[in-house]
Length: 80
Image (cartoon, rainbow, N blue to C red; front, side):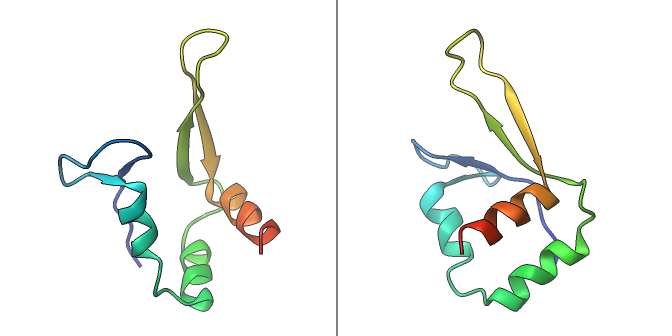
């Protein structure tokens, strides 16, 4: 499984090939079985950056929060 970095927008429209809406993102995994999903985490080292979320900036400018493959995997397992 190869992954291409993408920008996912919660509000708005996708205007280029590297930007997708949340709905488009969720459709990507709609037919993925759990074994295939977990294989993706095995292929990626635990400390690879998997997700960058920007804070709302309530106490200053928005700041990036980096999640690793390992932290995303644990979050997914906690929410099963």
